[in-house]
Length: 349
Image (cartoon, rainbow, N blue to C red; front, side, top):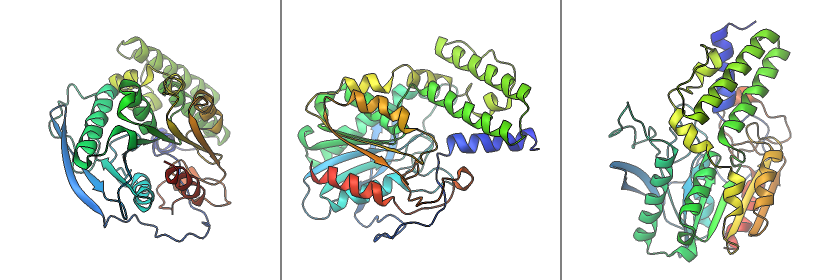
């Protein structure tokens, strides 16, 4: 049986390091590392903080621009965090560039060159500030390139999809197209609860948690969620899962991110939008059943929905083998299913 610390590390890795895996990949005609030859280093100001990023020029003429937003955590412009080097958003920039779309991606707070300079550790920015950062990035992209809203796309991966939806909700006239890649598709704390429950079930099945330990952790996590939603200090007794996920430190961010159902935001998008939505049977973080809520909500838009069989949550090519959460740090080539579907959508913009 694993010690508590070992179990906690396994649970947190599976929940937060968003599923990837190793497998025999399908043949692919691009390198496994992104191509940054057309990148220019740029920076912009938002909330008194300097954000650093990369402006990617297209191959050939510019026929549009895209803001590319990464997933959760202190993620850099390429979609990487710490030792987790999966290059998700860098690969998206590659595909956009090949199809005449210039793009901006930037280091979030705590990631890459942006880091935490200028952040008050006693009052860290919440999710609302993250949306404001994205809005300032979008304004910078349009000003720098001279491309207007009618040729502007916002693309978000995972948590970044929620940021994209909030951005569109705040100023729908600023953009014309939205891409939601393996998106956070139910309320934030509901998704986190589902992930915690799944991992506890797996720990019980493996003999790593007793039923009593599992029930205690579930109850304490549920209490923490209720406290966050109510804006109260966390009242749950110490617990390895509650404590290890940093709920206390991130309570403001989680409360602000959780307040809106992504499906409601999707339903409010203008009819004129072209939208792209993905899910994968091997996504260990967001199920296709959850994504279906957003798919239904987007029916009034010009929706291109892509359901994958072998893509990881981070759009890596898993091939025919089962997804394995224990290999979440493994680099993978970009999913060929994603490349094909995404390319067709971008070509039609």
